[in-house]
Image 1: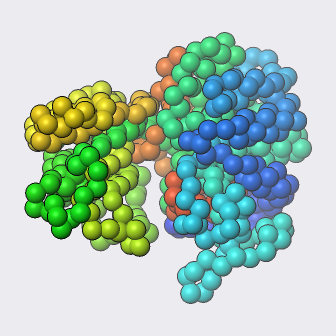
Image 2: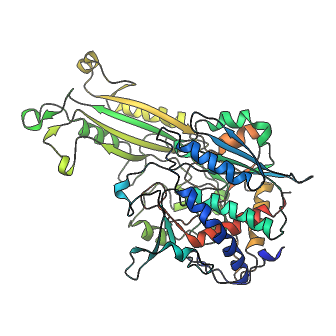
Image 3: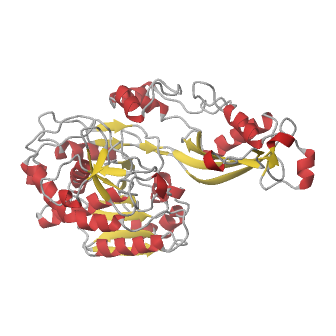
Length: 511
């Protein structure tokens, strides 16, 4: 193994993924430091995929230039203002296998007032103070080869998923500049609509199937295992969204004049939602979990991850988890039902003594291979009807209001399918070898964590199905990164961790 993989220091297997100062670490730091200005520039480009406009095109063009500078042949696949960036590193290595790497550059919606900084697209560097609070430090603190790995960069997409793009580019630069050898040919697919379930990726992959043809795909997304050990994930849940609008009076009504007479849609909605789960957090809709089965081998793999559930509960701030399954990892193998937002009337200074005219619940459902979107939506629809509600796909007419006592409009959003790869596949042994070699010099020789399937969703199925290739996911960013929420951040030690993992894959030949 090349010099850069000879690890001479120690990696403490702690929640914060601490790094020791070693010669090999200095090599990683050298190229991380070179990459930071480019990474910071990328973070300043607005990228919310739910907002119409050409900002994602700006991101795609920036990425095109960045990858072309490194020798990639790039195609921008037009996709209704959600372009995908496809690329192949040239020149190709003869008689070598090809690995396709997936990343995405779009981000979740923002509520700027919730963030602890002026603008989520103006990255801010912070360090945890003695009192436990985050305090802003000068960005110059990051521009030193001995930067503190506990520094965190705050801003939208610092971790999800522009952080791994920065790590990937830095790793490529290090390999080239240090005269190291790529183990495989490299292709990329950069997605601009992952946060809205990648509705266009299937057709893009199908149309560019010859260009994207590869021997395997690696998904560079999601949060790393909190132990600090290298990690590989062999599946992910799918997702489908559901919007429920409960209707009451045609206009908001005075609660004194009409209270006790006109039904309140907010009350009807919360009662319907409460009927979907029991007091232990389990979905009570018949059949919701029954098609998803775990074997003894599955449970053995899940147990071997060594999740520290006391630390998980402490980090997220709960005393007891929901009782879907006995452990954190096992819980993520089953379909979920999550209320992601509720709206009716007003609160705080906007509260008024009214019976609101409607109430809205936005729901996301994480699906499994055995319980897909169609299966679960059908169960939910039957449950709503059983609870006495009349379902519409439009706002009710006067005639429908007169006929039905409880009316709910149901809209199903885009979906992305679940995917799972056998742990006995050759890709598992390739990934495992690459990570073992990359971390081999550590006194503790940390073994990679192998995860059956993570709970989040990426468009794995939509890529591997038309290309007919094996896959795994390799998460790199810190587990407590606040992705999808305000104050999203990347721990800079994880930037080095991600470079180490990515470099291991890039330099290890696929069998």
